[in-house]
Length: 278
Image (tube, rainbow, N blue to C red; front, side, top):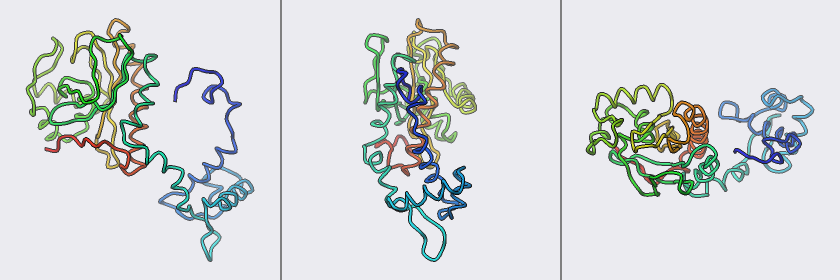
């Protein structure tokens, strides 16, 4: 999370509690590869000395987050650990979780920030944060635009199989929205290949005159693109190369956080809108 105040943890090391970090390092030492660990193993995997690991493991066991494995010197995570993530899992869907992340970048990084999904060749906007008056075009949740001409659509299409790309691109008419809009199928498929290699999409007036956008995909637990995040500015605010340099790290970070949420929740955090399945 980006913060401006020097009193916040990101800027002030005095606000960082090292003992709390050590606790989570021990918890994260347990995993699918080694669900049961001795204290020595927990120490090695968490980077702590054996004495520190001993105290932390027994504290976590006393609190109910770890349990001793009968007949061994090993410990395992308990179901109580689910409490740490239950509030997040129960807190609605991907658009709900996207909202605070989108708010962080408007207006400092972009004039607007969006979350969208694919549906029969269109991008359907699921969440949107706008800086009032900064852009001539407003996209409200539920509104649509052709995926063929939108950066958020390109970011999603680029990570689909080619037959699914074509199905989406041929599901609706492709018309010129500006002189920069690519409408021919071969040109669009080549563009999607470039985006897949780069990891994010860039639009410079392709969807609407005077708007520049950077977008990246959000992946579900299976690795399929389930949604996309985009950041947009008025072209008068910044040259395209400068905007890409400034915005790409943020759009990739937000998309990555939402992908992690979907993956770690096994898609309990997702979108109700499942998009077009050709």
